[in-house]
Length: 330
Image (cartoon, rainbow, N blue to C red):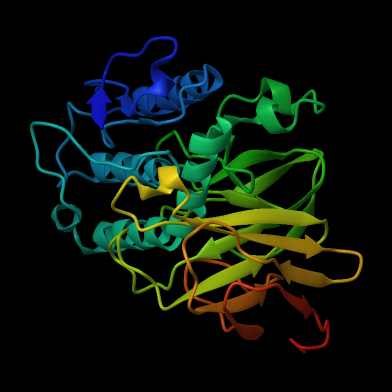
């Protein structure tokens, strides 16, 4: 793998990750990193990142730089590659004071919880030429307002990210493209095709999930990408039909090139309120996988922490159908 500041047409054929270079740590640069990443993704180059906080960075002991770093860090969680780098001052989380350290730990935890989702998207990049960080026009080309927005984007097919890019900001306007959406932090369902005002205290980046989404998540205890979870949480965002292919391999070798992987097709059928976890395919065998199913709604299956599951199943590679009981949470 190569981490490089240089890019050229066709580079996506190689194991190369671009980053935006030795940028300065300021608010204007943070905002323009969003533009840079979306333009690169639109050019067909899927793996991109920034020096979180800027390469030429500020002092973690100053209040202004702490705020900038938190907002950049939140954005970084939803970049294809997540990394902190820079000069002048060290930037380990504990150098920013206890309050900011807790926020940074929260977002590190979120990134690791999302590894099954992100790793499955990496498979789509490899197998389908997919892009993980997506300008709204890629997924909502029929929505004229979405086509003109440059500071919101999709992270994979399900999560819309609306970063905070100005100081002393605790709310922002967010456009919800046509359809149905969930507030990630509260579970509230919202109608799309309109602008809304979103709360954004320092510890929260506005995130919205498309109805019909299926998001697999690691247990909160996972702290290494190579760690194999004992169970996964499957969050189901009802309202529309949905599908997600959960990918896994050995995480170490090139054996996936010979088919040594597993893909579990998961489908949500809104009309009959049925979740279908299909028969897996690929050479990698599945002995047993505990799946904790959560039907997301207001105050349930929201935020970062693991939710109390509505149902638990043990999946061994064969199709399972789970009917939702709408009274089960009452």
